[in-house]
Image (tube, rainbow, N blue to C red):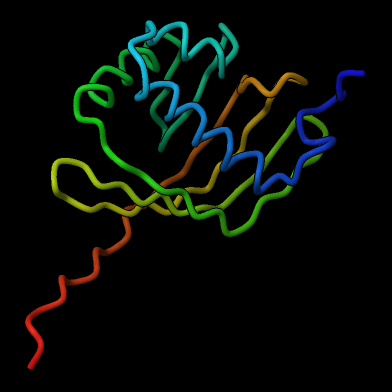
Length: 139
């Protein structure tokens, strides 16, 4: 029997971490068409608002091009997550290394998912965290 929500049998923290890791892995590990990868994880009518910027399916696919080209590494640290029905709210830090530079983003995520676990809607509020200074030579 298929769960009525994607979180019925999953911890919300694990779900969002796995969703992000799997999507990123699929996007970067092969040469499959980016649209096919996006569609595996998102509904055709996906709409995300990231810091007020509307991102539909076409913009999401376009966003994957520089990601594929630059091949950043990333790690998600989920601090808290809660789900109710088909909705999930999470606060996490996304640590990214891209072209030799480190970036950390604090993310407040509010999303809606299908029973199969595809993202239908999302609102993200982000802020860049200060980068800790590089360790200097030992005294």
